[in-house]
Amino acid sequence: MFVQASLIALLSGSALAGTTIWSGSFNPFPNVSVFDEWSWADEVGTYQWYIHGTEPTSHYLALSPSYKNPADTAEVNGLMATIDSTAEWNSDMERTELIPQTTQNLGVGNLFYHFSLSTDPTGLNAPDVVSQILFFENHFTEIKYGVAPNPTDLQWMVSSQFQWGTPLVPGTWYNFAYDIDFTAQTVGLWFSTGGSPLTKVENNVAAPTSTNSEDFHVGVLRIVNTPAPENWYISGVYIENGPITTAIGSGNSTGSSSSASSSSSATSVTSTPTTTISTPSSTPTATVPEYAQCGGTGYTGPTTCASPFTCTAISPPYYYQVSRKLMRNLLNIEFES
Image (cartoon, rainbow, N blue to C red; front, side, top):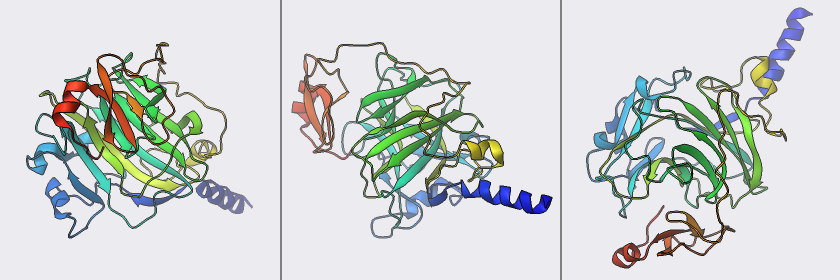
């Protein structure tokens, strides 16, 4: 009876874990030169690699155990993505980004997009410059850094509207899962630090959820070109269907505590005890500040730009952003963001 009960409990716990439909593990990459094997003519591997500057791949990407969450025992190496003044791609913005290479439909049902983030222990060199991190093409969900009034926070944005944030402490690992219901058109957020299981910190809100399965950007885009390099560490990237896996690095929920918290249908939000959640102080909403979104598909926020800026098409019709009039007139370019 004990064995039978234990087996039932084990199977029940396992049933709560989701199924990985795309793995972004860096284990298949013994070195960064393997990323160069992908091309539009030969779409091999698990990542597309074309959004980067003109320097060799080794200038923008590096693999090492030092670049992964130590709690992620399933992964050998993490990725260091570097942006600097050479990282311009199709614009004057700095970009180092990988894209999933798959035939799997990554935009149907309720999916969870997992990833872990960290930075150099010494901190970032340009903390006052806006960066977009692990985002979708139409920016319906993304992590941002450098956004006022709390520029040193990691901030979760839905269609460029603030939802949640936490101070970025250099050397700390931050684990995220975008809880995306493509059917209901909503998105929520799961979060933890270090090796702690994910908990839901923000319930799902309405969003223009859509993807062609080739527009989830695993990397960093820095809005303004500046010489100061930034190094972001990324690991634990994978996409699963529900219910969510809350354990970090194991690929599935383990133990009763993880299983109990793994259901994606939870309606109450629990904050992670080890993390301080910061909410920006209220600011006037009549005008949109520089670098913020001011228009695009599904956008419902303010559209009047603060002087002397103007609303500029960045990736029409999906995304319009507040930019300097002079910059827009000089560049007059459209590019994928």
